[in-house]
Image (cartoon, rainbow, N blue to C red; front, side):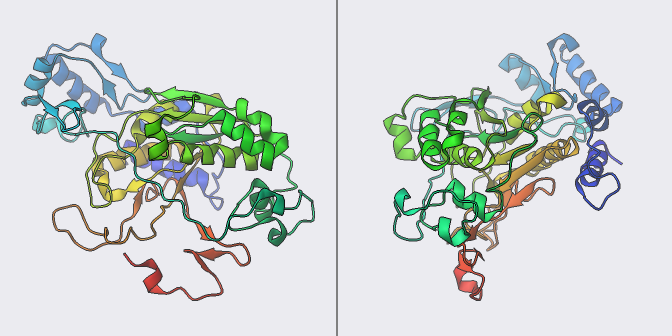
Length: 407
């Protein structure tokens, strides 16, 4: 069994309530032992690097030694990869130095999954956000104050979903957090998203006053230059909707699960192996690899218990090697006892008019999301309505009709 085969088996075993090993999570050191590269793989890579005059003193390793980082002159990289780098300039003035193609000695193909930066062309772009309403707006004064016996119908309205509604709907309105000293929840910000503390305080003061102080208590961590902005958005940010997703995330998590401690990870950059398709012609794929490398380096005492991410990509815009690498890293988190949640997507089987392959065949197809398609995370789908709750925007008492999920 391969190194990752073992960690995948462990992840499934400790996460399955029916398995005898359920809940027996691995430590960081145990995970490292399972996924570290084989000696012959490291030897082959080290020998190749040494042949180009690169000694061990120039190498930086990930905690599991399955990633190597180094800085070299362009001329040396060109010799090693049998390529030439060029400066590419976009019409908006953005400049990138990339190599359209590159190569490795054949005996290294089985040991090296990717080398970056090489032939990826990254330009930060945000996917537009559409907020859909389901009825006329309702003022907060139309909602009764919190009461223990309140029914879902009394406190919920499809036009204004409040913490009281969600806590009542999911049966946690009377639950008292018992392990705030042990558990920790987390959210992810990518693509320049922000979590505005003052906005969060206003929201919580109105809809869950006892949690309002949490707006200034949650921890923020920047990874790879991720933004921690707390100043008002500029004109460009306002036009692109920056902060809508990030504020929704922090307000919902604190509104439901306070006083469980919260940490917000803000990761800069983009997926280096982006492949465009009709729905995502410009790179808006998240740098999951960068975040995973960071969080897997944390000691067990600093790992969050649950991580919620509101971002996902068309699976076909992510390269196979990148998806395999990051999915295996999600399995490492699972083996260490971290529950990782991702949204299953906003467009059902795909956005209308965009359900076509990007492999040159232009074949009609459903478009799964990634990382939602990785078996080692939990994908959370959307529902609509409260009485009754329905799927796919339709109440359960009504039959599902294929034309409502067309592509």
